[in-house]
Image 1 (cartoon, rainbow, N blue to C red):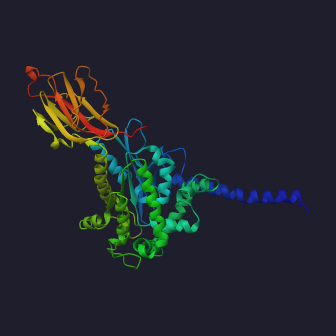
Image 2: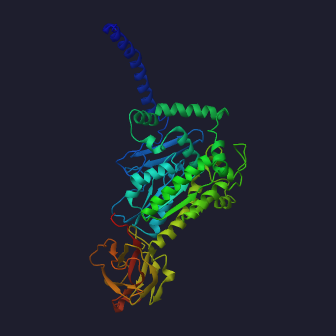
Image 3: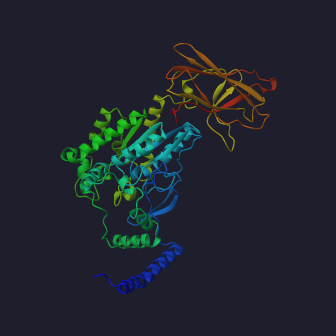
Length: 507
């Protein structure tokens, strides 16, 4: 017997009659919360295929964590990367940073994440050359990072990759295997209805405000405890006892290393410790102070694969002689590195990245001035102008600089910006750059004219060094012109940001 249409219609009207006021009340409360500034948006990690990053683009929020009692500013740019780093065609080189929330900078204000520090330091050493892309995301492990590399990362053609491995990576992969998930990243891809509902909750001040209030009450009453990490710690710190988790992780890590190596991209890996390897207080009751099995197992694998491994445990131990903690809220409610921990991590990664870049043919003439043979008067300095300044080679008339035994890469280029300084008494100068193959003595000469009369500064010049691929060369810098009588002793020009780079082909 078919249901009566009249009864069906009455039931529908009843549902609408009951739900409409509830929806109206929710919308009204949401408006009130937004007007009053209550609640705070949370980061939306939805993955979109049409952007190179793995976060929802165009987010600018103050994220609040009630259990830690901290708020921090986070920006996701239009390309889906956290922070200022993005793909720019005018920048010939880039570094790709991969990892979980620790690399992304959970709990860290904008400008103080490890990729932010790397970007600033590379800008000092190679002005205008590098982009640093923060592709870290919440909850990622090696499966997600490998999937990102295959779908998006390799297409970016980075000049180096920095990977951070955190203590929970091994256990989270094992959890997903048991749950039948492929990757966290796959779960976050745009799909209906899960994606819009989740995004709505993350961007609802009403929902987030009520959630924060409940957690704050529990914390104040002493009844709130963060998720128990005992199982994660046990799996991470006792590899020999948990082959079911470690063996699949190591297999996937080796596949990832092989995929990056297949693109001829240098890889640097940093292993970040857990605070309970550094502290003896807090929870869990189990004692992991000084335990090293986690680090030793990964370092052995990375050494076998010939990947530079950065063990941050002894470095953090040494640094904590001067600091009470390197983790958010002292490690009580959160295991992520704080701003000081991010800085130290970035410092160690940068030291290894510089070695990797030098092996690929990158060289900074300003920083390497002590390696030059100097004839005449030449030094290092700056223009000291309000805008467009950069570290420079400062050369006087008749000066000569020679840099020998420089190993070039597969696609080498010379980058420079010769400028006649405003305080020079001569209006123009001619710079000659000689590049000589030290094996065959083949030499190419490049000439650059500078002039103060035009009132315009020419942009940096990128000179491809064709025919010198993978060669060992000598690069000489010469000032050809003789000074005018009134200009004796004045510098002829400043060579701003002179560097050798190795551009990826087919970018």
